[in-house]
Amino acid sequence: AQSVTQPDIHITVSEGASLELRCNYSYGATPYLFWYVQSPGQGLQLLLKYFSGDTLVQGIKGFEAEFKRSQSSFNLRKPSVHWSDAAEYFCAVGDGDSWGKFQFGAGTQVVVTP
Amino acid sequence: DGGITQSPKYLFRKEGQNVTLSCEQNLNHDAMYWYRQDPGQGLRLIYYSQIVNDFQKGDIAEGYSVSREKKESFPLTVTSAQKNPTAFYLCASSPLAATNEQFFGPGTRLTVL
Image (cartoon, rainbow over all chains, first blue to last red; front, side, top):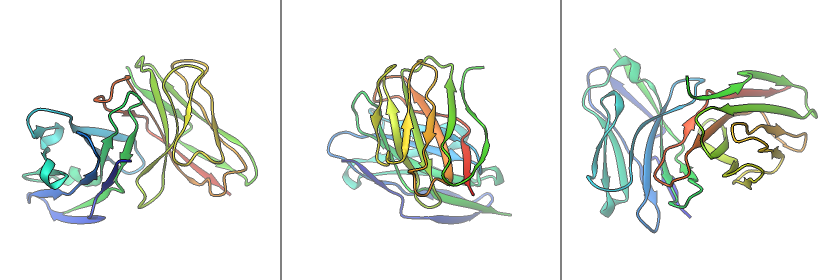
């Protein structure tokens, strides 16, 4: 069965600084990988996804992620964070069958300071 | 506007009562999902459905029940058998393909008093 680990529960970053959120997965075949963002009390919004091709994926809101098969990682990055980026971020891996079942990481809470 | 609606946003119930959470989508998606979210635990899958009149248990189905009588609707009932029902519940839908992302509703926060 697939699994996802987000090693950082909480990250504090200054506005304008760069941000990197880590995601490690365990899956036997080529994974389908997703990053979602959640504002407090809201649903999840897709930032980006990877399932094949270029390993550097561009998403919405200036985010990008890089798939590294050798490291089983799919880290999310943003060069310069804005106060509005304060939220919780979830990495997810799909198991590749038609059910589209996902396994979610525990999430990383991002706090942005002035 | 196309999307997923969940109602109500906040729900309070007394212990021992069953409660049903609504989820409706007008995206014409075949698959629908229910997740439970607790602090520090991410999202855990309760039930999912690929087609009308068919659904499967997820990782934490005990104490919950669902139905899928219409493609656009996937209500979740939290029964009195669920030992710790207070949580944030999220409904999602997706087209039937592994590469497709899931689209999420705004969630329902259930508090059992």
